[in-house]
Image 1 (tube, rainbow, N blue to C red):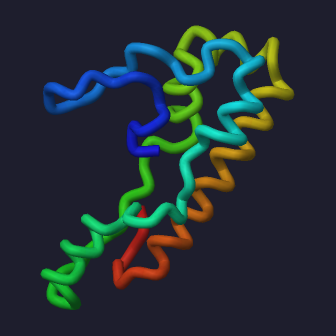
Image 2 (cartoon, one colour; image 1 turned 30 degrees about the vertical axis):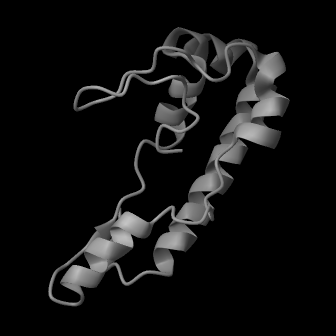
Length: 121
């Protein structure tokens, strides 16, 4: 995910702010899940982390970071106001999306587990 499909993002600055949500209407959900949902096993996903781990080896306590997960990702994909409304009005769609996000993060944690991190946070 790492910003790649969370919406259009400006490239300047230290932080990113979503300027367009990837799933602006629920009719886009199937397309997002089928074609735009990131692959946790994508080649190169953890290359930068692996390079840092190679430098520090066993000399440092290094933790893999899995952040900005379920609720945060949901409101990036749908927008905050939509998310709050969706929790009541579109429960089935929210459930499908959250299940896909859950599965993504489980697989990402498995990817981290293949490295020599001391912990996953």
